[in-house]
Image (tube, rainbow, N blue to C red; front, side):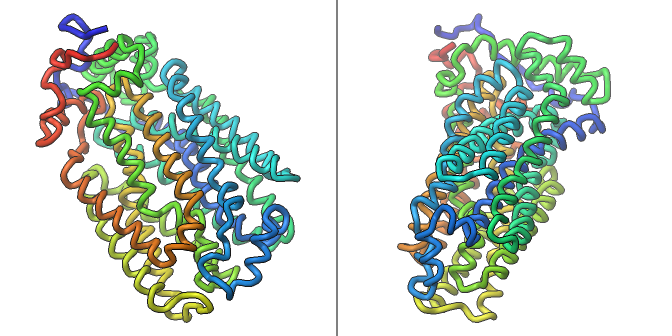
Length: 510
């Protein structure tokens, strides 16, 4: 129905300066437990590349790749080019893409905890199935269940963290998700380093240990409190206020509570959030929900993390050296995320994204030049150049770890009004997993055909995204999540699109 002056208008005025409260132990514990959901995403990213380079796994499921691997001298770039092997990695992300769309209405109608629990249970089942796989059907079915778990987890956890965190520390606490992801990647790399020595069954242990973070996520989902925003949106205002008082550590929460109530009134008037998100007044958030996850994947980071052992072996590193090098990149990623947590609420989102983008461009170009000049068919990198490549890739990973890695999730989760927040996060996760799937499926073939040019391909995209952030992303540091709409109305470009008052959007679809 058309919205007019009598329709709920959401947050009508800025009350940010009236917000009270402090960082309580209760909210920190809740955020840490919830962020474990990120570790299952990271664990799979880290484990997949290691497993797909293990001889026992390749002999069992991808014998042709195993044969090609024994003839590495024939074509350094193409020896792992196999669509079946790529499908093993990418099938999870296709399943996650579909699951994230299902998770959106569940997250809105039944709460953030419900999606976290569903994700944990599905991932637990997938890990068990993968570890016991006796044929390709069991292997792919397990991957699909893992994908469903990731779709639900990635949909709910960033929202949960954004809504629980106090405004002045929202960026840092939200990045718990990315920190857990990076720790999951590092843990997976270290596990692969150990299990690759346990031939021929080490790969089963690598895949099966994913059950541990899945179990923690499931149990955590049952123990966590629901966010006050979700409780109020679903009609439990008193319960919502009690939770808000508890997590802020003060009884003086009226300003923040009123913002949530105002936002929930508009949210409950919106019956079709996915349709509403297409309206003109939500255009900036929609653009960011699509562009931020797209750009995050087009940095090329997942290609390096998925296939780090494969990539390093293609460059002539031995099996042990390649897994050790990929473990090193995982450690660098985890460490650099801590830098982002410490600085994001002081330096702001834009400064980290732009500086990180510039550093990543330089690193990609350097790697491309080294591989183009010193590496090709029937060639291996010398020890000196191999070390240089690892160092530059670590610098690339560190730049990603304190910029696009955490902020690719943080920014979309904090910019949407309550009425479209679940739908917006659903779009963010769907786009992220779509491009993750595409890159995972295509990377080995792209590496074979582009050769060193694959790094220039990603460098070009990082240039585009850095320019995009400079011109189109306003600074969200310190802005209350329910008052983000005022930011777009002040931005040099988006103010031309977003109406000054909600009533001005005559085409609102409720």
